[in-house]
Length: 237
Image (cartoon, rainbow, N blue to C red):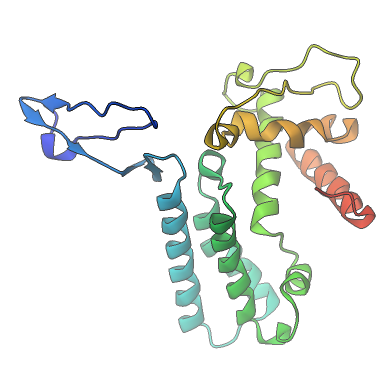
């Protein structure tokens, strides 16, 4: 089976990339700024701006559909519709493309901010108050929480992923829990935002009680309880 030249392309990544010309069956391949792979738009600069834009557009379209088709929304209806139809667009494979730029984070948060305004009984309340009534988390919190859950699954062999993608520290003299990760340096901001890099500090800051959870559900409960205690004491980062 031959490759279709029109469907093939080259994406040059890296600041010092010489950007050579590549040919297939004697035809030069087109250069691409970004391509979709398994539903994720990867840009040549690795900032995932295309993916963020796509996720925001899909989520906003879904919010618009809900607004057109439901004349009245109470809290229970909104929780079901939002978590089922809207949030999946904002979180699909987010462990891969989790944004680090403030503009991208704000764009994702604004989808949820605007959506919660559809509930008339919450009119006049601040965004934080609306989230509390609806028992919702900010999109930023959910991404960090999702990273911690995925890290827990990897380190406890609950996923068919090589555990050695995360390096456990051999130093047992430091305070904290027994599964601390090695802090690896990164020369670029993009590299430091890769999953295996960005989870290190947040994971190492968890307590032994959270890390010692026996299952994913108990880990989620312990993690949320610990974050709430930190927020009340004003120590949340």
